[in-house]
Image (cartoon, rainbow, N blue to C red; front, top):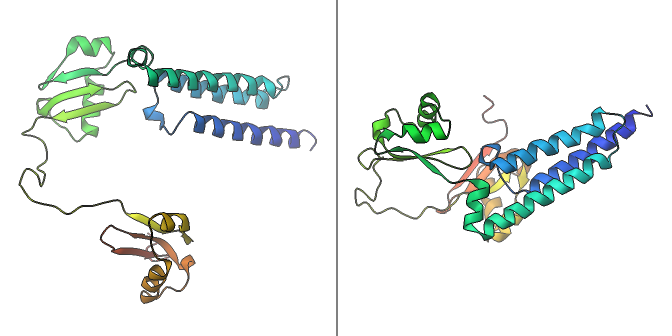
Length: 230
């Protein structure tokens, strides 16, 4: 029992340190990380495991290197924001791998991108034929951006000269029985109006609501808890 409590304390502390470190690095998904950011994330996770797996390692053996890595990452991010040329050296540059429906063999070899990998990425974008692509660009984070030829793009209301109404974001009002009071204040949504709308639907308590939201037209969407379980 004596050895378990310090281990739990170390684990919780390192968990908090990692969460804070990741938050400082910015809101990025794994697939959106630049190479140097991914390297920092992997090193932080490895360093955090040392005091937990090796008895001779003290807590500061992980905390100090993690602090140094986060500082370096923030410094590099700051420098890359300030200078376009420096950003190119640190993050690299986007590379065109398909132009006018033709795969660029030399560029693909340079980027070590195989035909199978490229076709797989195209399928993720619902593209079946390489000939339909005007440009495919391999971004610095490894993601593929696809620009279809104008004849192959989906038709938009603008193409048909159809006027459309403005559509803003749907505003979350209740999530899993919890009222989003701060959101309602920011968006100037009257709580009494919401209560009346819920009352008309036979709902007397926010805890009965699984999800509720309102769109820019004032239409309220409500789903009760237990209404759809499958």
